[in-house]
Image 1 (tube, helix red, strand yellow):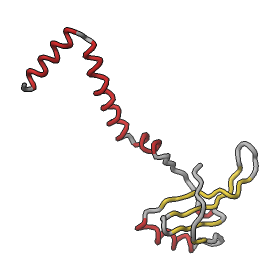
Image 2 (cartoon, rainbow, N blue to C red):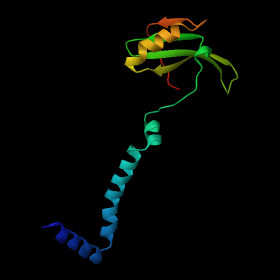
Image 3 (cartoon, rainbow, N blue to C red):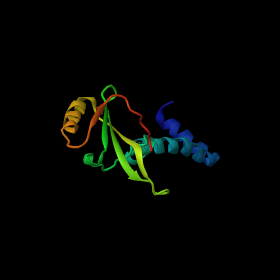
Image 4 (tube, rainbow, N blue to C red):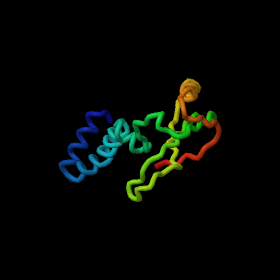
Length: 126
């Protein structure tokens, strides 16, 4: 059958039983929603648990560098909102593209008063 006859029979079936409209909209609607969500920047950042923070490099007490995974860790102190205590063991992980890792590391080594410690470090996602 060609597409004209398929459309014709589809229209005839809808006249026989209107529930066929709802049955057809369901999968099509789900497909359209999936396509829209997959292309949405907000949905992608939510699904990836992606966050963008403004962090001053000079506020870091220590900087950790792990070259095998291209990760820079900033040891930042911050006040916990519930307890009011200063948190000192928080390391903010920054994932750097491999091509830019050496440039970023050389920049960080030139920062005054902040030691750069190379090697593995614990990454905690908050």
